[in-house]
Length: 280
Ligand code: NDP
Image 1 (cartoon, rainbow, N blue to C red):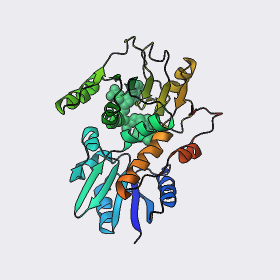
Image 2: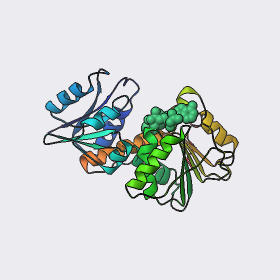
Image 3: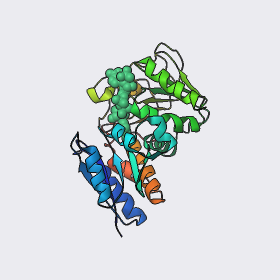
Image 4: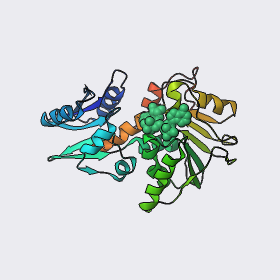
């Protein structure tokens, strides 16, 4: 029987998820359909329950429903619990299980596609919102020599560190923007680029840096990536690889089979003459 999946969000006009999952299904031979449900902003739960009642097997969830979906979950993975938000659900007998695949997807892009393994390296994450939260456990698991978070509102980064410590996860450090540390990998997990802004960046962060990664995608050379290019950072990347990576982790969680991601990332990337992604 053909299984049904979908992405829920509002608006959804721009969503690439149906294309991505159709490609994964074709590649792996999985028998499924994947559609879009643009639920009313105040009608997510009703739309979700209708989808489940209609035989849906699972779904992705995007803005503005990630927190509401999390609140409806009856079980969750550690990544979802840490993020306090979910982008992937699967439906079991009467239950809704929540996962957060954003961080694992980001890590897969950084380590496997961009070939910047974090083990023993110094990583800086700018931002402490939902995406940064989703990334902290996978990043700590990757065993960097240092993993530092800086946020415009320091108390939010502090809260993440406190939660990690309470759960027995050591290794996330906090710093101020005036730190003079250098980093091998700098991740922009702020949403500053969505409004054409550049988050504050510590003065020496890019010195000798291997990879500057912008979570936003399809924005071309953002102010953050421009700064990195001007500082001669070796590899610049935007979040298209994270987008495909998080979808692949979701697909594997649903179907038990891992699709490949490299070709699809290259297909969906903005051409290099507008350098949003330069593969090493
Ligand atoms: P949130 O709204 O949860 O968090 C926003 C973060 O950005 C906060 O840390 C906020 O700081 C910071 N911020 C916002 N504006 C500025 C600014 N002008 N200067 C400095 N810091 C700023 O957003 P998300 O975590 O959900 O998303 C973050 C980014 O990641 C977005 O660009 C989003 O598009 C992208 N994303 C990409 C995905 C992908 O698959 N490629 C998946 C998910 C997200 P403060 O706490 O001070 O408000």
